[in-house]
Structure formats: structure tokens, C-alpha cells
Length: 379
Ligand code: NDP
Image (spheres, rainbow, N blue to C red):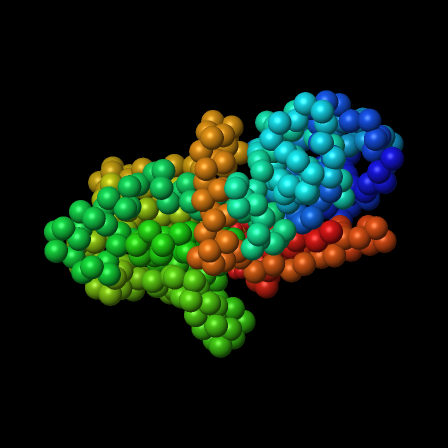
């Protein structure tokens, strides 16, 4: 028998109140199509906390299978796992492979997992090249944030074609098409900056002011080093003068308009994204970190013929599983080649003796702002 521990919850609420560390044992007789996995790393994303709070777009199923006093669910959507045992009919995996869940809702906050129907439920990492040059934390954080940034930059507005068209009309060679995003220092934001740069795009990136000007400058520089064209604070962005600045400093009097806005934040910041978009521009909303909604203003919708879209990775993955695998494989190769850096992380060691409170607090802290890195359980 393999001894295993998992964070579980049986009712919705704040992570610190409803999460428990549950110990159970895993039988050595696996079904034919199943694999036994050992967890190597699992990040805590904002959506994991929302799922525990019961405010996310999909509710987990509480199941009696783990032998908890009440039916329970395991949170966590992302993780990197090592295959430790393979059932007789499994085709895709062998012992020692690294795998990630193919869809969200897997329940990654646990030391081990038995996965039935493994060929469908898991993606193997690294293809022919295997795992050389990759770390568990890199692999564990690739499927949600970088994948979302990739799809949002490619699937709504053809920015690459716009860049070519504008170049052929005589624009500066360094001038790829613009996109603009708030929450630019988030995991998604940092991924969008890097992918945009690799694809020859220009980005305007909005971040919240830090507690001192030096810290704000350091954050701006950090994002520029990743490939950001322009980094501004939310105060600069919300200021009346921004419209003129956008026109004069960045878009050549509006000749190279911002055609895509990525909205992570909502509220006033989202309204400012709407204002900054050029005619027929598109805003894609994917997060609501400020917990504030925003109006869909009538005038700009009509007179600028704007388009408002929503992106949800979970649904996109179900609709296009093949594309998801391809997107992940491509990003993994970029990481391996040193062309793509994962967002900063704060590692939380999870070994057999780690106390419940340490794990619960790591989950609870996720929605606090101004963090130095995303929490990642490292096993
Ligand atoms: P991170 O944990 O990496 O970053 C959080 C970001 O939110 C930081 O930029 C932080 O800025 C900002 N933030 C936190 N609190 C506030 C606030 N009150 N007002 C404004 N900004 C705030 O996040 P992720 O990249 O993992 O996720 C970002 C968002 O994207 C989340 O809402 C997440 O649910 C969503 N998401 C959605 C997906 C989808 O499919 N729709 C897929 C992936 C992510 P600061 O440093 O200034 O605090």
C-alpha cells in the first residue's frame, strides 16, 4: 500500500476554514488502464481559491471515495507528476515519465494520485526529448497561465497579420501590432509579454503602483526585461492625460491603434482598456482580480464598433484538446530553449511531516495582492 496525503474540503468557504489534510492509503492493485502518480509540484492559482470558496464557474463533485468523514473534493488544477506504476493496458506512459492533467479539475493538492483512463486524462511532457532541461515547477505551471496567454493573443485578433500589413504600409520595422493588458505582472500577463515579444508584437502593460517609487520602477524594469514595450502604472493609465499620451507617444497619432485588450482586473481599469482600444478593437476578459464589474458603454460599442469577448481555459480545453496539447508542447520547448521564463514563485515544501496549517495558509494567501510570487507546493 502507498501512503498518501491530500488537502480536501467538504463544504465551500475560506481555505483556512474548510481545508483539511487527509491521510489515506492506495491499494497496490491498479485497474488495467490506470497509473499511479507521485506529485512533484503543484501551483496555487486564483481559480483554486475561488473553487474552494464556491464562487468559480464550475463546482467540484464531493465524493466519498477518499474515505473522508464527509464526501470531499481535492482542490488544484495544475501539477507535474511522475509516473511510478503503470497498469497493463496503458499505452502512452512508462515509469519515470513526467505528466500533467489534460483538463482542469484534476485535484492536484495531494502527494499521490491514481488516474484511471490515463491515456486520455494525462499529457506526457517533453515528447522525444523527455524531461531534460526542465524542472517540476516549470512543468507544473505551464498549462494554465502561459496556455491562456498564448490563446488570447492568437485566437481573437490576428495581430501577426496586422503587424505585417502595417509594415507593408510603411510603419517602423520595430513596430508590431499593439496589445494592451492590465494585471500585467500576473502569471498570465508575464506570459503574454514574452509570447508577444517572440511574435514581434508590441505591448502596453498596466501594473499597480508599489509602496515606493523605487519598487514601482523595479517592477517596470522587470517586465521590460521580459520583453514589455511600455509599462505604466494604473494611476498613469486612469489619468485623463493617457488618451493623448497613447496617441502621441505610442500609436503614431492613432495610425497604429491598439486592437486587442486583455482584461485581468475589471472595474475602472477595464473601463480604461475599453477607452484605449482603436475602432473595431476587441477586449478579452479573463479575470476579475479587483472583484469589480464594469459597464459596457453604449457609445464606444456603437461608434467604435468594439467587440467584447470572454476567455475560459477550461471550456477551451474541452473544445480543443488537441490544440491544448500542441500549445503546451510548444511552450515547454520554449522553456527548454531558455526563450520563456515562468512567473516568480514562492515554493512551499510539502513533505510527509508538513503541518496542515502551513499548507492551508499557502492556499489562503493566494488572493492577497502585491505578492512576490505564486505559491507552489514542492514535494
Ligand atoms: P497571479 O496570482 O499570478 O497574479 C495576480 C494578479 O492580480 C497580479 O497582477 C496582482 O497585481 C493582481 N491583483 C491582485 N489583487 C488585485 C486587485 N485587488 N486589483 C487589481 N489587481 C489585483 O494570477 P494569475 O496570472 O494566475 O491569474 C490572474 C487572473 O487570471 C485571475 O483572476 C485568474 O483567475 C485569471 N485566469 C483566468 C483564466 C481563464 O481561463 N479565464 C486562466 C488563467 C488565469 P499586484 O501584484 O499589484 O497585486
